[in-house]
Image 1 (cartoon, rainbow, N blue to C red):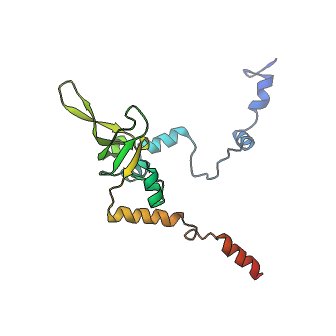
Image 2 (spheres, rainbow, N blue to C red):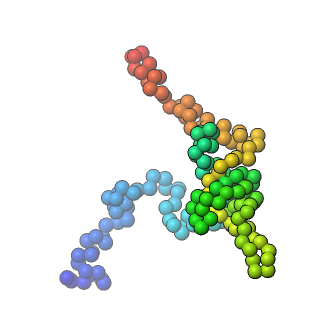
Image 3 (cartoon, helix red, strand yellow):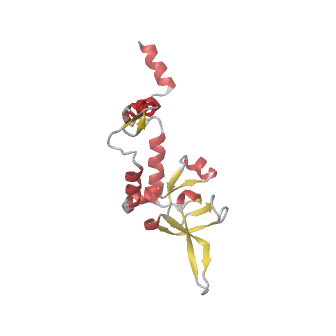
Length: 173
């Protein structure tokens, strides 16, 4: 094979197509030009996120019972929630959330502590994606949040039509 500027002739054909052509060939074209798919930019935004954004990032799944009761899948974790660790070396340990450490993206759970050599104990941080909420600490504001989420899931709130309303529109014509 003959070399073309450091590449073989076989490689030059595949290298000549633009990145946009490759994306459309693979079907992974971005829809919104304002949202970056760059790993570097996404990591920067994640780790420099303000506390208000970290609250949403630090959401945890609800247990099956709570999911059926409230009709939502996840909620931002909060001090006072009872959780169960579902992955990692502390799997199946349960306890109440004692603190939500947004700066480090971890939650501290009671009875999940590390004994130091001097005898003092240090809480172990667990990422909220590795826990499951088993009992909610409900307040008026949190109940309002759940109600808003459920209202957003319903078809009526989004302006969508049900099968019956579509049939009624078709028979009017």
